[in-house]
Image (cartoon, rainbow, N blue to C red; front, side, top):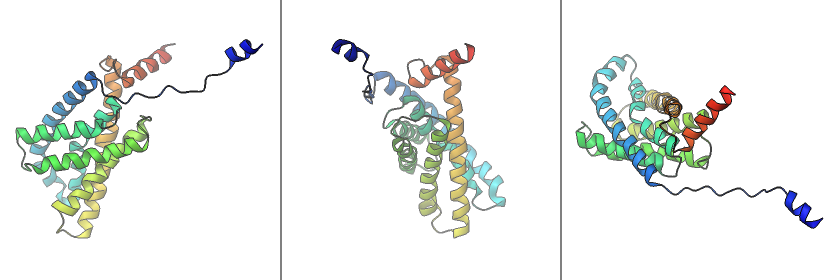
Amino acid sequence: MHATLTSTRPVTANKPRNFRWRVVDIVVASVIGVASGVIFWAWGLAWSPLSAILTFTPGLEGLLAGGWLFAGVLGGLIIRKPGAALYTEVIAAVVSMLIGTQWGFSTLIWGIVEGLGAEIVLALFLYSNWRLGVALLAGAGAGVAVGLLDTTVSYAALDFGFKAVYFTSAVVSGTVLAGLLSWLAVRGLARTGALSRFAAGREGARARSGALS
């Protein structure tokens, strides 16, 4: 009787999550960072003509900020380990800086702050929730970070109206360009099987199997 009760007792203990980085995590995060860095550099070249178009409302230049924020969110959504968002964003910043940007060494400082903006949001969800809403919040977090940094450093001398528009635009840009587009990119990569060694890819495979069954 005792043996029967013991064998049918439900197991409630959860297997602890492994947050240790694998070699494949480092390699893929680095690849994401390098590729993103090239895009960052190209986005920097496009910044001047694009921002000139947006000058009809001072501060709308913040809508372009998301072009430098997606690396951290994308890396965080794929690697799903503490530090991934910060790592990929910093690598991207370093690569764009080494290629050559008009902002020089400050690019690295901005990369650290932007990566932390996304990283903090993912940490608040204990690196366990990877739904669209969290991706949007991570992008918004990066937008808040760059919005605060730009309005207190780059545009410190400008009036409050400009800063308010810029900050709001940066958050919107981060939410859409870094949050939504990164989430869609992960789903697209998962469908190709490129992320089969990651939880994001396995979730995509299970979703496809469920849809086909």
